Length: 618
Image (cartoon, rainbow, N blue to C red; front, side):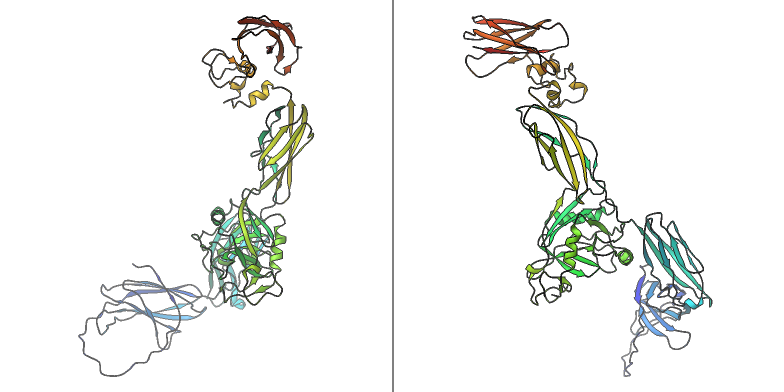
């Protein structure tokens, strides 16, 4: 069986029969007549016909109707062969119709079967209230069912309503506060004293209110920082330090009248947000115009370029409708074709008023996917305040175009329109930093990175501020210490150890027999295996070149100086703890010779492990 056909129910015009001689044809047997014709009226302007096909060779079926039960039947139209279901529209409410159907033969001249019918149907009264309504979660809702014949109404019913809403069966008022998001569809029946009901469907979609603004929050405070005087500037990532609870994606449109920053709702309209950023990433919005402005309603853009013909922007595949947030002032929604809910492409509009009562209900609701952030509505208001001009001779869509000239010129000039010069992704947060003592640590911000430059020895606090698109802020404090020499904790933080345990002073993550504390003291790499069993340190510079072969013992370190020349001179040593060198220098004299051994002993009593540094001079 073929799919149901839809006929527009328009009375047929009378035809004029011409009399004359007709050629002779052979007459074929008529097709079998259809049976079991049924006619139903699900609402006031729709009638559905069904019948049984008893023929195997018909050319189609012919439908006849009349209004009332007397008078001539009028031929309405014909169907395809084997088609047994037809839907007729544009019928009148509370009207009696009669229908009959016959099969059409395929011979010439045409032979017809007898009629099935007539079958009588009384269309219900028209329900004049809307069949689609928007509501807002957690906000009071009121809506009334209305019949075209209110004087004879005896009661109201609806088969389904969103949670939190109830119907008064005596008045038809639906009231309450919706408690659950989503779309609910139900059958409406309005009973009348004459027995003929009013029938319709009612769909109520519960939208989210426009999300409230939220300030940034400190997610993970940055750890304290230790710097070495004379070292290169250190970079501290702020990537995970702050979050903006209400904005995860943003974009900036630069217009002739100022910037429009959009904060997006990817959780509510993921496909629509992705669709919009598709146009942004390809640069499709560059050099486009705001082509439409309706006072106290919307301003619209995204479709046409600021060129001599207002040429069209190439569109992507239409995006599925995602109406979840109500159309309030400052929200950004997608435009679409009338009667086609899933037809949005590149045209978007800014709501200049609270348009939910209209746009949340119309065309299955218009998808809100962003809001104008910061002071952007001042820019939108400035666009909406511009005088309007029709340039429909250039482009039929330019009937209410805002123009940056008073009065607007009669001749189309794209340079006087409101143009979008760029559209780019935007970080929802911007950062700044202030040093408590710039003489100790200088600071700067590059994107989401904090740059710290050591200036002098000491400690200070760095105040980092994150600001969102609505100028709301959050702050965190980072302690910073600048040391004259390296410390074990600073050194360990630079090594990228695979785990906290591997960063312990006594750990040996590379397995070369040298603990991290020794690797720190010798300046060697703790994650690179030393195959020689011990480091060979070269001080570099000068002549002759010296190498130090260090051996540990209980009370000190024996240093064998290997040189090709006379290393005679002086040597000094100093011991250190993990927090810095604390003992005074001890000076001695190295004897002349091809090989000199110096043993430096810790002058302090045995205690925690410490380190020695050695200076040799000629």
